[in-house]
Image (tube, rainbow, N blue to C red; front, side, top):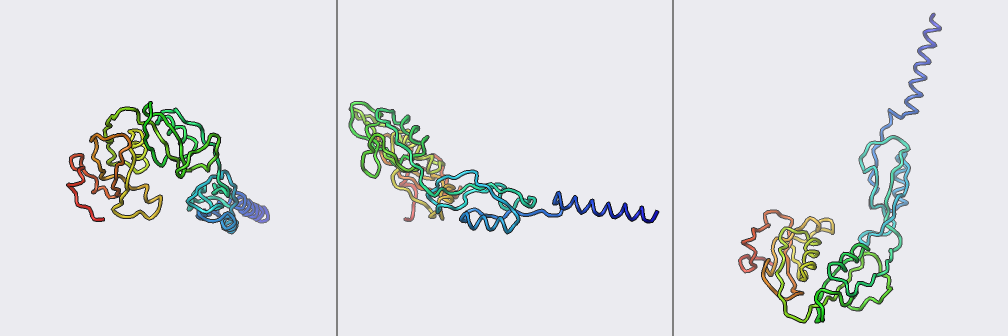
Length: 258
């Protein structure tokens, strides 16, 4: 009987040890943060933590060095089992090029949508005399016309030259208050005006910090009428107290230190 009991106890202990080793219930690991590390460094860090990795995507971000980890999943600090695969997105070693489509004679809105869908940015919209209003006359990069079939890196900033028409039509300045800079640029272009000078009450630390800022003042004020192509200066802040009411948008009513 004693032998039987001892056998049962030994089998129970052995089974418990095997289950722990198999399921790793006693081994919960925290995922290290490997973002912004070069792939070799990230791989070593994961290996030292008994984790594996797999690259699931490679994108190009000009704001970071090539070859660094941009995203990881599961995120840093997550609890996982030993030998778990961590999925990584890295910054591409090479720029991705895209052929610039021919958007001449497109409407301004259609041209902007087409170019942005391919990853290009619209830096400026300028207006020139033309028989037809609001049709694209030319696409330029750094002051030079982009030839048909030319390829440029994705993310390149392009300028559109748009027909002003034969008349002297006035357009209303759009309201940009409360908008992010990216949204303000899109709204301005859709309204046939441009963003002029950009002022920050406190300089942002980086691009991510700049995305938190919004327009709290603009000049000219909304709803005033000017020729197409008018440049609208904007003042940016991330302090909600700086957001003014629509009745307080006149630049001369506010003191600003530059």
